[in-house]
Length: 209
Image 1 (cartoon, rainbow, N blue to C red):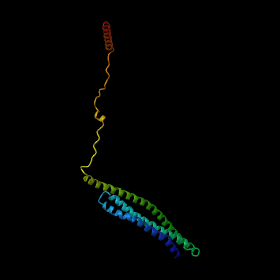
Image 2 (image 1 turned 30 degrees about the vertical axis):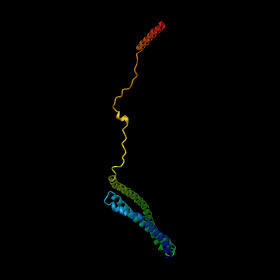
Image 3 (image 1 turned 90 degrees about the vertical axis):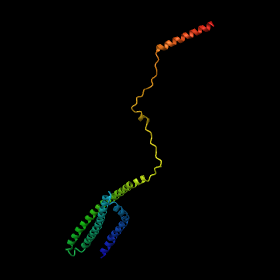
C-alpha cells in the first residue's frame, strides 16, 4: 500500500495535473479553430482543416499512450524491485520478477516511442494551424477586396500617368548632325587682297585731299 501511495503521489497526480494544464492551454485554440474548420469544409481549406483535425486526434491518443505506458513501466519495475527482497525466501518469485522486468522494459520502450511520435505530431499540428490561418487570411482577402473596390469613390483622386521618356519617342528617327561650314583658302586670300586694294585707294585719296 505504501508503494501504491508513493506511485500515486509521484506518477498519477503530476500526470493528471499536466493533462489538465494541456487541456486548458489548448482549449481556447481548439474552440477558436472549430468555427474556422466548419467554415472551411466547403472551401479549398477543407484538406488543411482535415489534416489538422486528424493530427490533433492522433496527438491525444499518443499522449494517452505515453502516460499509460509510463505508469505501467514504473509500476512493473518498482514491483519487481519490491519482489526482489522476498525472492530469497521464495525462489518462484524470480519468475514474477523476470516477467515484470520484461513488461516494464516493453512499456518503457513504447512510452519512449510514443513520446517521439507525439513531438512529431505536435510539429505537424503547429504547421497545419499555420497553413489554415494563412489560407483563411487569403480567402478573406480575396472575398473582401472586390467589395472594397466596388465601394470605392469614382471621384477619388487618381494619379496621372507619367510621360514616356523622350528617347523612346525618338527611336527610329534619323538625326542630321550640325557640321561647321568650311571656307576655301583661295577665296579667303582673294577677299584679303581686295581689302588691301581698297585700303590703298583710300590712303591715296586722303593723301591727295
